[in-house]
Length: 118
View 1 (cartoon, rainbow, N blue to C red):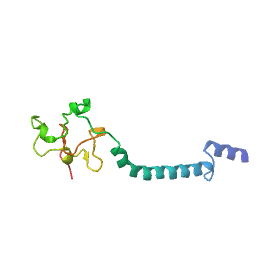
View 2 (tube, rainbow, N blue to C red):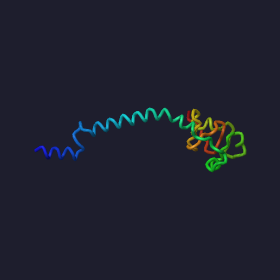
View 3 (cartoon, helix red, strand yellow):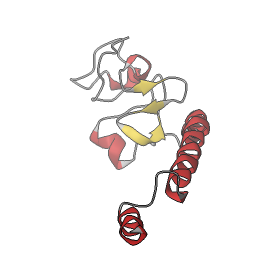
């Protein structure tokens, strides 16, 4: 009579108080810790990214300039627009959603500029 119950328990992954439950809890704690500590380290990782070179392919594709006043000849540019007031820009890390592998100058501008919602 014990044999079928044991077989069912093995097929179902073991009884609820078995090693599987402990493993799940342990992995959950590890994942929580990584999220907690990793989240705090994200701004530091962003600071390690290089500044975007205006001559890089990605920068040229969106007409990026490090100083918005240099974009006055671009038909998409309007006075007052700069990375610092763009929705894609995060001031604390100089990160831009359009150039995720680089930091950008807060006084810069590109044709992807979007009005900030805040």
